[in-house]
Each structure stands twice: as C-alpha cells, then as structure tokens.
Image (cartoon, rainbow, N blue to C red; front, side, top):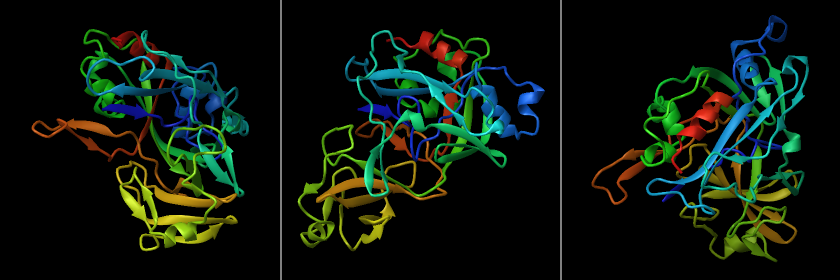
Length: 337
C-alpha cells in the first residue's frame, strides 16, 4: 500500500480553496510590519512574508519497501506574499514543484481541483490564491486559519515530534525512507495550525479514471439523477455505498440539480458529503464541505501486529503543517532515496 498526501495542489489552491500554510524562516518581523497584529498573524508573516516563504511538501510513498520513480514522489513547492496582508489582500506568489528525492521525479500533472461555481465546472488555478487578515486570523482564498503554533526543530530528523511524524505518515512509518543520522539544520521549524472552510464548497471529481480538465469523467451520460435513483441508485466504489433517496436528498443548489448524502463519507479526516450533479445532460460525482468545517489533516498509521496489514489507519487529526526553508533543506538531506 502507498500513502498519498495531497492537501493542495503544487502550491495550494484556488477559487474555493485549500489553505496555503506557512513555512519561511525567521525574519521580516520589524515593529512596522507586525504592529497591531495578533500572535497568529505575526506567525503567518514570520513564515510567509517575503523574503521568507511557505513550504508545502506533498508525497506519494510506500509504507514499506523502496519508492519507485514514476509511481511515487516527494516534492515541495513554496509561496510568499510581497507585503503584509495588514495593508490589504495580497497575492500569494508561488514556485513550481521540485523533488526532495534524488531518485524520484516531479509528477507531470496535478489535479488542481475542480469546483462547481455558478452552474459550471471550473478548474482551480493558483492565480486565485490570496491572503488577507480578518479579525485576529488569516484568510487564504476560501479558508480561515487560527491557532497557529511555530515549533522549532532540533536533533535527529528521524526523531521528530509526534505531530510532525503523524502528518508525514508513510515517510516516518516506513523505516527505510529516512536516515537515522541526519539532523535538523539551524533555524528549522514548522508551522501547525487549524483551517476552517469559510463557505459551502462543492467540488467535482472523476467517477472513474483520472482527468484534469473541466470535463471530468461522468457517472453516466444522457441521463438524470432522477433516472439513476429510479434504477436503484448510484454506486460509489470509493465509499462502498449505493446512494439512493433513502440516504440522501435531491434539490436545486445554485441552479444545479444536486444530490447530497445525508451522512458524511467514511474514512476521511474532513467531514465531507458525497454529491452528484446534473449538468449538460450528464451526471457527475463530487463532494460537499460545509461552511465552518474544520479541515482534517493527514491520516497516520498505527502498528497492529497480528492483523492482515500489520497496521491500522487513524483518521482523527485535524491540523495542518507547513515547513520553513531550513526544515525542507534538512528533510531533503535526510531522505534515503
């Protein structure tokens, strides 16, 4: 089994969006740039105000054995704001992804996320990433963040704090992926925070296969949700559920005939409802996250000797993590592949 972490796209997100966290290094905190700011906002600027930057690490790694190029990856991308959001909404300027592993290349494509906006499927674009301050918190695109904590790193990379090892799941669970002798460099730190969806968010996904444009693979063509419900419902292999009118309801949302499940999807860290949309003669699959939902973090693995897999998966974490430049450099030096 491999573990995939994709909390955002290469930099972060888009229109309705996933939060870019923070992760630059120390400076740029003069009294003029932090006066009147909350502790959370100061922490954000410490990590994301240029020349510092926010580092987002993404991966697809096996929880045992050696990573394979073309299948697995370990990459970073980073972004920063040129001026303090206290002066007004700022654009987050990002970089292309680079590999942290000598033997693994950067994937050729990423799914930037597809959102249902004003009755149309819109592909996410990094051009829509902005940061602003609201009250004592931070809003990045469609998410708010608070409870920001900066955690310094020292000692062995392989012996990181529990929150970090759980966030990176497979990278720390697979003992062959990190050197036991590598240490965190001077100034290495990570930012831990909670993120909350600001508005109701509807996304669209492929029912099968993998596409990245604004025409995802539909559940079925030339049909309606009503017809599919009358024929016995819609099977979701991902959820292990057949969705019918007994476990969901159909209504018009922003002019689109939409099915929303009555219970959250299983085995996710973020409470998410399954959706189906009727658009242009097709029925598409998607997800709905309610405004005010705290976004879940990454799953992590717990050893369970004697079970068929040897581990169980924990879905309880509800925090996000970003690294600073020194931590990313230390991680790059510590990977063994």
